[in-house]
Length: 396
Image 1 (cartoon, rainbow, N blue to C red):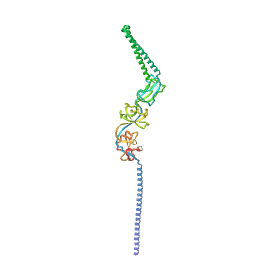
Image 2 (image 1 turned 45 degrees about the vertical axis):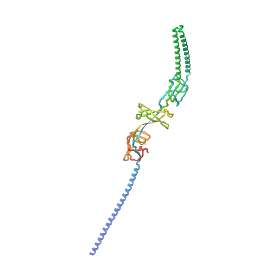
Image 3 (image 1 turned 90 degrees about the vertical axis):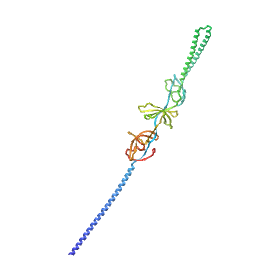
Image 4 (image 1 turned 120 degrees about the vertical axis):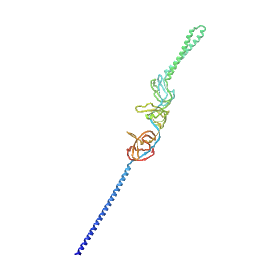
């Protein structure tokens, strides 16, 4: 029995060992399973991280691609020769209207036309003088009659003076004959004066140029009856001189002085003419706040009164930043530019512009010249926008 009991005890230990060994195997299996699951989780987390990191990089790249690239310039400061630009109409500097100064009559001849150059005293038109010619002939004959009477009176006086010493003629007779002779001589003078007056009246029938110059208008034709009240028959530009009557603002007018030179370019011509300011208006038009500067021009066939022209007048120099027209914008708040700040963000900067030249516009307030100013496409930007600034040379 004891033997059998030992046998049973041995079986229980073996079973216990087997059970213990099985639990250990189960625990090892569970550990492996958890390790595998942990590895899978780690792998999945890595894959997720890699996938999302790639998306973030793509997002950042896309975001970078959306930031616009703009050209900017640093204008610096330059010495700028001031130029005032103005427009106006061409006209004769000294326009002389010419009319009939005589009694008038029917025009017999017109000797010049518009565009002709005439000299002082040159006959422009002739008025019929057939009546005046006959009157002149009659007065000339009257002079001959008066002269004959004067000669006869002188002869009678000479004979009387020879006879007075013999006592045939009294002193009173001599005095009477002397008076008769004097009256006859006076009548000769009167006749000659009347002839001179008629000749002067006849000469006034000729319409003549008061000075040398260019005929601008002809308003008379042969057969036309003219009088002193007929108005202007011819217009002449004295010495052919022209002028530009330029309209300028109060500010620009204050910068001008007599004697300044100006370059005048008429519309339709490919050349300019050098003129000189000879008069600056002493008053300003209350309606448009503008005044007039008159710029004298020498005679040139291309200059036509009534034509339109522009003028460029030098007005001194100033030191200021210079920007191209594309960089300056304006709205209801005034003129402004866009400046790229240190953080590559766009900032609005109000400016005041000055002289306009062929090289750009002077900025007299608002910029120091060291800023990065957006050169173009400013109209598509807003304040605070991020940009990529590409620095270019002035004028690039």
